[in-house]
Image 1 (tube, rainbow, N blue to C red):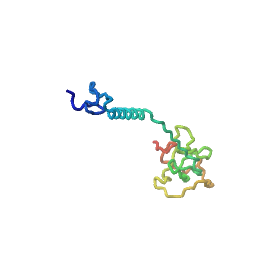
Image 2 (cartoon, helix red, strand yellow):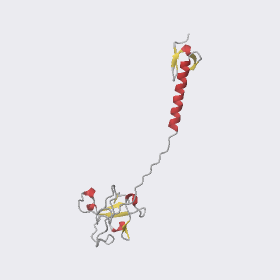
Image 3 (tube, one colour):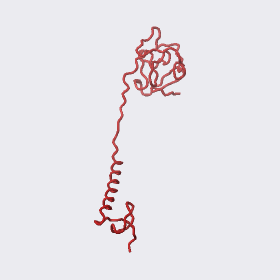
Image 4 (cartoon, rainbow, N blue to C red):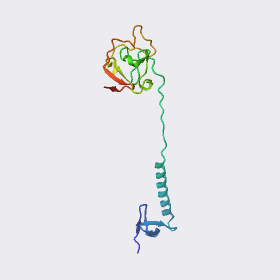
Length: 162
């Protein structure tokens, strides 16, 4: 005598609904509902396996726009405000032109340059700073600044180096 219910991993059904074969229920024509359940579960499993196997590749592009137009350079962190005279040391300038920092840096790959963080707003500086588009003041030579007192060394992306 067959047990009243036969179960497999996928479904349980009355034993009269199918033929029991090594713990699997093989649906018969006698119960179309069981056949439909079996096909639905198989379809869901197939879709799940297919969906997890093919993941689309996503690319992200970020355009930063033009570098800030600042007479003595700009801070190496967002929002890239103009830095005051004396923040960057002379090695940050080539022919009097700022070589850039952050996403606009265009110097050597292993570049490290001095900054004076007393002129950094993140270190409490509240003094005057130029605005974007301002021109350098006469007599403020960024290449031959004899009063420059750098106290930190930064790489091109603002990381402090020792």
